[in-house]
View 1: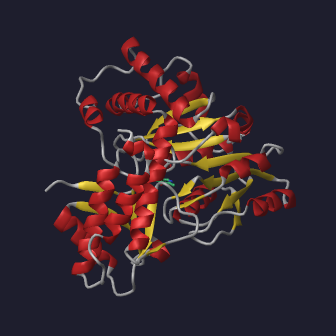
View 2: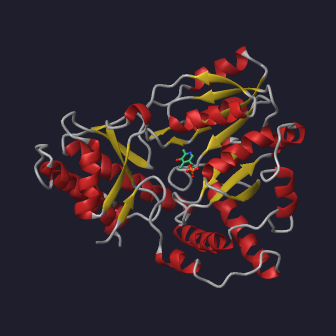
View 3: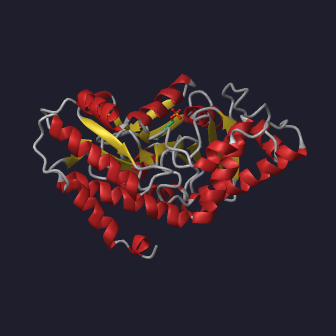
Length: 383
Ligand SMILES: *Cc1c(COP(=O)(O)O)cnc(C)c1O
């Protein structure tokens, strides 16, 4: 059976990207590699919408989150972490592991952040060196107003650190225009390549913290990364095959155009949400993103059984909830190499699986709602 991923990483891969990894390896200290890496660096600047350096690490996204903490902070530094989900907690845990002092801006899971609360937090404690948050909190699906946070922080010496791992290419992200000082990305989401690469874009304002940081670091040292990047190199052996894949996926994204890539995600998200509502189900949270649709399950539906059935019968894999949301929601990712037909497949699988588990849904109701969204879209009519 054909397997289809609707998980918020890893995501499906375009054929070109699969094949680019099969290419003969090249040595990473050659001109041949440098040329590829130069193109990758330009492509990354394009999708991050920045002129800042974008460092590349061979790791999952969390590695780059840890790298940001190790390079920006020193032990005992005070920071603000915006709460609201599992990945916000990850920021707090990493910062605490490095001896930082976390001040939490409490956000109810599934809601957006009130920028005024952040402004208050900063003005009450002038010692705050940095604010750590997500563009999309993937555990709930909520999107945060980073532009508003940038507007507040650019007037101060506090730096803004944003985990955009799931949101990169799925949501508008204007790193320079919005004044985001450190942006974290990962490979296995909308960049459409396998897990194993992570990125950090760093502003000059953030670089001042890097220069003063006394936290221990070795593999993750941004100073070494910057020196190497000047020669289109990495300090240590990178995942060369993944970098080939990234070069080709960045070419695809450039060809489609970043605005159109983001609009495609917005439209797939809209169709999915309409379908869910048409089926009589509820969307979890108040600030849903283009990355995933979090669906609150009716109490009689067993989340594990539902996901197992969708996988076994239709080859469709969606994600469950985490922590307090475990068993209560499923998360349908419409991320990366995903199109209208994929949405039709996942909605159809969900309708049929729910019916089999005893939820009364009229077959085709969700599909119709999704199809109507696609039908109204000029983008699809013009093809
Ligand atoms: C996927 C994701 C991560 C990184 O997870 P890894 O498993 O380390 O790649 C971090 N933050 C967010 C918001 C994510 O969606």
